Image 1: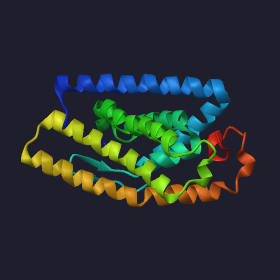
Image 2: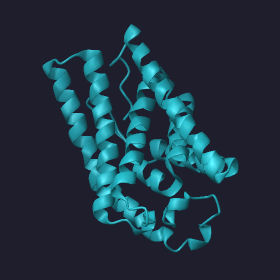
Image 3: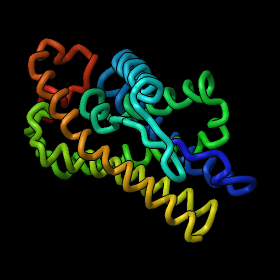
Image 4: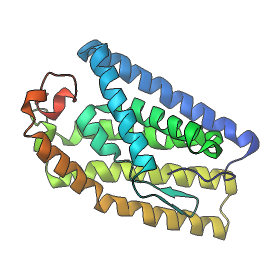
Length: 225
């Protein structure tokens, strides 16, 4: 989902700083709430795990440029279900930053856009989960339709933000519309894979009941709310 350099330039980049700052403040608020409820150590541990996972996803899993951006397997809903919203948000932000600093410095000017693109859908996913997952249901007991809804919401949010940045930066010319459309079509293919990954991870997690209360996973993974 890395926005290609040059899509948004000059003064238009200011908007990305604002949206990233807003997403960052909201993420910090989520982190504060998590630390109060579960402890700072648990938050820091899971955030470090998420950072390592995101860095691995970006660098090792297949990724390829399509249209105005790149297709990545971010597995945002998987991180959310395993680690919780705040650790996943910290991991996405730090993993993306580390990749830019050490492997893709040409992406750093787009960091605000990319950060907004992956964090805002995560926060929306968190809100959706509260609506479609009953309070007496642990995440390991999710149905395929619920996993699909969460993954579709996250990936659809990513595509929507990429489209917004592309149209904001380059307008609605035919070539840009075609580039956005090709990216969106390619990226939504991830929806075919991520729910299966979520369910596979959740199935494996059922055998890890000993992690309940350890701080290594979100409490909701193995326990009802």
